[in-house]
Length: 220
Image (cartoon, rainbow, N blue to C red):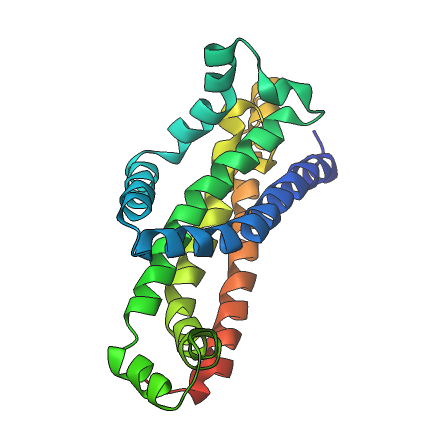
Protein backbone atom coordinates (compact mmCIF):
# COMPACT_ATOMS: atom_id res chain seq x y z
CA UNK A 1 0.00 0.00 0.00
CA UNK A 2 1.47 3.33 -1.08
CA UNK A 3 2.30 6.11 1.34
CA UNK A 4 -0.08 8.52 -0.40
CA UNK A 5 -2.95 6.03 -0.15
CA UNK A 6 -2.34 5.59 3.57
CA UNK A 7 -2.14 9.36 4.02
CA UNK A 8 -5.46 9.93 2.24
CA UNK A 9 -7.15 7.22 4.28
CA UNK A 10 -5.80 8.66 7.54
CA UNK A 11 -6.76 12.19 6.53
CA UNK A 12 -10.32 11.01 6.02
CA UNK A 13 -10.36 9.60 9.55
CA UNK A 14 -8.62 12.68 10.89
CA UNK A 15 -11.47 14.80 9.55
CA UNK A 16 -13.84 12.85 11.79
CA UNK A 17 -11.44 13.30 14.72
CA UNK A 18 -11.33 17.08 14.20
CA UNK A 19 -15.11 17.29 13.85
CA UNK A 20 -15.64 15.34 17.08
CA UNK A 21 -13.10 17.56 18.84
CA UNK A 22 -14.64 20.82 17.59
CA UNK A 23 -18.26 19.90 18.30
CA UNK A 24 -17.36 18.64 21.77
CA UNK A 25 -15.85 22.01 22.62
CA UNK A 26 -18.78 23.94 21.13
CA UNK A 27 -21.30 22.10 23.31
CA UNK A 28 -19.24 21.20 26.39
CA UNK A 29 -17.91 24.67 27.19
CA UNK A 30 -21.33 26.33 27.74
CA UNK A 31 -22.83 23.16 29.25
CA UNK A 32 -19.95 23.04 31.72
CA UNK A 33 -20.80 26.56 32.84
CA UNK A 34 -24.42 25.56 33.46
CA UNK A 35 -23.31 22.51 35.44
CA UNK A 36 -20.95 24.77 37.40
CA UNK A 37 -23.81 27.06 38.37
CA UNK A 38 -25.84 24.01 39.38
CA UNK A 39 -23.05 22.74 41.61
CA UNK A 40 -22.71 26.18 43.24
CA UNK A 41 -26.39 27.02 43.69
CA UNK A 42 -27.81 27.64 47.17
CA UNK A 43 -30.70 25.30 46.35
CA UNK A 44 -29.31 22.21 48.09
CA UNK A 45 -31.22 19.44 46.23
CA UNK A 46 -29.98 20.73 42.86
CA UNK A 47 -26.47 21.29 44.20
CA UNK A 48 -26.20 17.77 45.64
CA UNK A 49 -27.71 16.20 42.50
CA UNK A 50 -25.35 18.11 40.22
CA UNK A 51 -22.28 17.30 42.29
CA UNK A 52 -23.27 13.62 42.45
CA UNK A 53 -23.62 13.55 38.66
CA UNK A 54 -20.23 15.20 38.20
CA UNK A 55 -18.68 12.74 40.68
CA UNK A 56 -20.06 9.77 38.72
CA UNK A 57 -18.91 11.08 35.35
CA UNK A 58 -15.43 12.02 36.59
CA UNK A 59 -15.11 8.74 38.49
CA UNK A 60 -15.86 6.38 35.61
CA UNK A 61 -13.87 5.74 32.40
CA UNK A 62 -14.86 7.61 29.27
CA UNK A 63 -14.76 4.32 27.37
CA UNK A 64 -17.46 2.91 29.66
CA UNK A 65 -19.55 6.04 29.17
CA UNK A 66 -19.34 5.57 25.40
CA UNK A 67 -20.73 2.05 25.77
CA UNK A 68 -23.47 3.26 28.11
CA UNK A 69 -24.60 6.07 25.81
CA UNK A 70 -24.60 3.90 22.69
CA UNK A 71 -25.95 0.59 24.00
CA UNK A 72 -27.96 1.17 27.19
CA UNK A 73 -30.90 3.12 25.67
CA UNK A 74 -31.55 0.24 23.29
CA UNK A 75 -31.28 -2.30 26.12
CA UNK A 76 -33.64 -0.42 28.42
CA UNK A 77 -36.25 0.76 25.95
CA UNK A 78 -35.80 -1.82 23.19
CA UNK A 79 -35.15 1.10 20.90
CA UNK A 80 -31.62 1.79 19.64
CA UNK A 81 -31.99 5.56 19.60
CA UNK A 82 -28.76 6.40 17.82
CA UNK A 83 -29.36 3.88 15.05
CA UNK A 84 -32.09 6.22 13.82
CA UNK A 85 -29.47 8.80 12.84
CA UNK A 86 -27.47 8.60 9.63
CA UNK A 87 -24.27 8.92 11.68
CA UNK A 88 -25.65 7.37 14.84
CA UNK A 89 -22.35 6.12 16.20
CA UNK A 90 -20.75 9.52 15.77
CA UNK A 91 -23.71 11.21 17.48
CA UNK A 92 -23.48 8.76 20.40
CA UNK A 93 -19.77 9.45 20.74
CA UNK A 94 -20.42 13.19 20.64
CA UNK A 95 -23.05 12.94 23.40
CA UNK A 96 -20.69 10.93 25.62
CA UNK A 97 -17.78 13.31 25.03
CA UNK A 98 -19.89 16.42 25.66
CA UNK A 99 -21.24 15.08 28.95
CA UNK A 100 -17.81 13.92 30.10
CA UNK A 101 -15.92 17.10 29.28
CA UNK A 102 -18.70 19.41 30.44
CA UNK A 103 -18.31 17.88 33.91
CA UNK A 104 -14.55 18.40 33.87
CA UNK A 105 -14.92 21.95 32.57
CA UNK A 106 -17.52 22.68 35.27
CA UNK A 107 -15.01 21.89 37.99
CA UNK A 108 -12.44 24.15 36.37
CA UNK A 109 -15.01 26.94 36.16
CA UNK A 110 -16.01 26.39 39.79
CA UNK A 111 -12.41 26.49 40.96
CA UNK A 112 -11.82 29.73 39.06
CA UNK A 113 -14.95 31.42 40.40
CA UNK A 114 -14.36 30.31 43.98
CA UNK A 115 -10.77 31.59 43.81
CA UNK A 116 -12.06 35.17 43.68
CA UNK A 117 -12.03 36.67 47.16
CA UNK A 118 -15.30 37.69 48.79
CA UNK A 119 -13.83 41.13 49.36
CA UNK A 120 -14.15 41.87 45.65
CA UNK A 121 -17.85 41.04 45.69
CA UNK A 122 -18.32 43.25 48.73
CA UNK A 123 -16.43 46.11 47.09
CA UNK A 124 -18.62 45.85 44.00
CA UNK A 125 -21.74 45.90 46.18
CA UNK A 126 -20.50 49.04 47.92
CA UNK A 127 -20.00 50.67 44.50
CA UNK A 128 -23.62 49.86 43.65
CA UNK A 129 -22.88 47.26 40.98
CA UNK A 130 -25.47 44.58 40.28
CA UNK A 131 -24.62 40.88 40.51
CA UNK A 132 -24.53 40.69 36.72
CA UNK A 133 -22.15 43.64 36.44
CA UNK A 134 -19.98 42.19 39.19
CA UNK A 135 -19.73 38.83 37.46
CA UNK A 136 -19.12 40.02 33.89
CA UNK A 137 -16.95 43.07 34.58
CA UNK A 138 -14.96 42.04 37.66
CA UNK A 139 -15.12 38.29 38.26
CA UNK A 140 -15.16 36.87 34.72
CA UNK A 141 -11.97 38.58 33.44
CA UNK A 142 -10.04 37.19 36.42
CA UNK A 143 -11.60 33.74 36.09
CA UNK A 144 -10.71 33.52 32.39
CA UNK A 145 -7.09 34.35 33.17
CA UNK A 146 -6.90 31.73 35.92
CA UNK A 147 -8.59 28.87 34.08
CA UNK A 148 -6.69 29.09 30.79
CA UNK A 149 -3.84 26.73 31.88
CA UNK A 150 -6.09 23.93 33.24
CA UNK A 151 -8.52 24.36 30.36
CA UNK A 152 -5.69 24.05 27.85
CA UNK A 153 -4.61 20.79 29.48
CA UNK A 154 -8.15 19.38 29.26
CA UNK A 155 -8.56 20.47 25.66
CA UNK A 156 -5.27 18.87 24.63
CA UNK A 157 -6.36 15.70 26.47
CA UNK A 158 -9.61 15.82 24.50
CA UNK A 159 -7.67 15.59 21.24
CA UNK A 160 -6.13 12.31 22.36
CA UNK A 161 -9.33 11.00 23.93
CA UNK A 162 -11.15 11.23 20.61
CA UNK A 163 -9.33 8.00 19.70
CA UNK A 164 -11.63 6.20 22.17
CA UNK A 165 -14.56 6.78 19.81
CA UNK A 166 -13.35 3.83 17.78
CA UNK A 167 -14.63 1.43 20.47
CA UNK A 168 -18.15 2.02 19.13
CA UNK A 169 -16.86 1.87 15.53
CA UNK A 170 -16.60 5.59 14.82
CA UNK A 171 -14.21 5.81 11.88
CA UNK A 172 -11.62 8.20 13.26
CA UNK A 173 -7.93 8.30 12.39
CA UNK A 174 -6.97 5.47 14.76
CA UNK A 175 -9.80 3.31 13.45
CA UNK A 176 -8.54 3.97 9.91
CA UNK A 177 -4.99 3.02 10.91
CA UNK A 178 -6.21 -0.18 12.61
CA UNK A 179 -8.21 -1.07 9.50
CA UNK A 180 -5.06 -0.79 7.39
CA UNK A 181 -3.23 -2.93 9.95
CA UNK A 182 -5.84 -5.69 9.83
CA UNK A 183 -6.27 -5.68 6.04
CA UNK A 184 -2.71 -4.99 4.88
CA UNK A 185 -0.66 -6.15 7.89
CA UNK A 186 1.06 -2.75 8.05
CA UNK A 187 1.82 -1.42 11.52
CA UNK A 188 3.55 1.84 10.56
CA UNK A 189 0.26 3.67 9.83
CA UNK A 190 -0.48 3.52 13.58
CA UNK A 191 2.70 5.48 14.31
CA UNK A 192 1.94 7.75 11.37
CA UNK A 193 -1.46 8.49 12.94
CA UNK A 194 0.37 9.49 16.11
CA UNK A 195 2.16 12.19 14.13
CA UNK A 196 -1.20 13.77 13.30
CA UNK A 197 -2.04 14.00 17.00
CA UNK A 198 1.41 15.38 17.79
CA UNK A 199 1.15 18.15 15.19
CA UNK A 200 -2.41 19.02 16.19
CA UNK A 201 -1.50 19.25 19.87
CA UNK A 202 1.62 21.23 19.00
CA UNK A 203 -0.53 23.83 17.26
CA UNK A 204 -2.92 23.95 20.22
CA UNK A 205 0.01 24.41 22.59
CA UNK A 206 1.21 27.40 20.56
CA UNK A 207 -2.32 28.82 20.49
CA UNK A 208 -2.80 28.56 24.25
CA UNK A 209 0.66 29.97 24.83
CA UNK A 210 -0.35 32.98 22.73
CA UNK A 211 -3.61 33.36 24.68
CA UNK A 212 -1.81 33.21 28.03
CA UNK A 213 0.65 35.84 26.81
CA UNK A 214 -2.22 38.10 25.73
CA UNK A 215 -3.83 37.74 29.15
CA UNK A 216 -0.61 38.40 31.03
CA UNK A 217 -1.56 42.08 31.43
CA UNK A 218 -3.49 40.97 34.49
CA UNK A 219 -1.19 39.92 37.32
CA UNK A 220 -2.57 37.92 40.22
